[in-house]
Length: 512
Image (cartoon, rainbow, N blue to C red):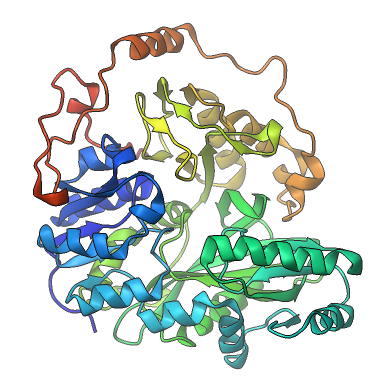
């Protein structure tokens, strides 16, 4: 069991989630140390943290995925805890165990829970025995003939999935028997590259599906609750781009049943801290099925925070210190409606290809009920090494209709000059009658936005933004070293350029 006050935490991540955790540390009075690669030496997270630790070159395999360097940085900076954020090593059971073996607090679940939910076939077996509904499937591991027989028994379409997968990697929808074996081979190759594990399994694929997940929190005293749902049906390449809560699909009865199933799934692996149980719901029948459990803080956690008025990151710290949950299930409720849009440097008109490049200017929206979680600003670069997400734009309002209007207004005010972004695409998705009616399924983008191109009369940046971008390109100094010092290899960084606009920055904006 975790115990003891956390004084100094190593944040083993980058970008907007590292910024988010730094901000929580400030409010809790906990010193923050952010790890960074050479590509992130001038990042906002590094500038905000109390200290920063260089852990290697830009490729993640040489920095953010190097558990040995991360633990060395934790020891060198006298940290007593590690927060993994999401992605990278956040769901790596061996890393969590190494943190504990080093005498540090891991701000997340126990390694055994990460391991059990990390192998999807084992996770399905665990939750099935706990009474949670699961899709028909085949665990894999046999010869090709067994995959073919299982797919015939389930009926097409089927889904090929990586046993150690996540984020849409190693996933293939198969609609005909002739496609199955090539899809399995392709999924194996991708899974081996992404997860060093080529195992794949089959599940029945639901075409008219809603993707709905439940946030769970569990302490070290046997208390587990859910903090309601988030609908994540709007996706591209099996990756979410818009999330909202409450789900426009669920009624009160289905919400209660799915919430209880989420709690039972967490209890099946003796879960602790923050996690997310994901379900597929057959929109035609209302039957729901366990999909997977993400054993970490979720990208879309802000909409839950706004709808419940609970700071999930600060709660993660308190649970890790050994405190019990400060509420029971019956104490929890939601207010209003929250929506999150993920703003990416990508080209939706060209298969959503990432668009690396320098951000010459970024003007973020603000106002009542508007929140921007960002790790990128003017003068920063979107590199080929990492996910191209620029920011998460979140709004909260009294009802869904008002939240949709507020989100469209906020997107219309968001100016990013430099890389191509998906902002115009997001506005078109929000305006579509199917989405407006709350009827979008996981096939929504594929069915309604195939061949999408930006409108010819799309909004142009205002003159002021263009002038500011030109000035930024001419005048901004090269990325400054962090003013707080770098702990990597024991060297101290130089002073921040006093003319840099970041010398006066105090973090990302949360409004409303």
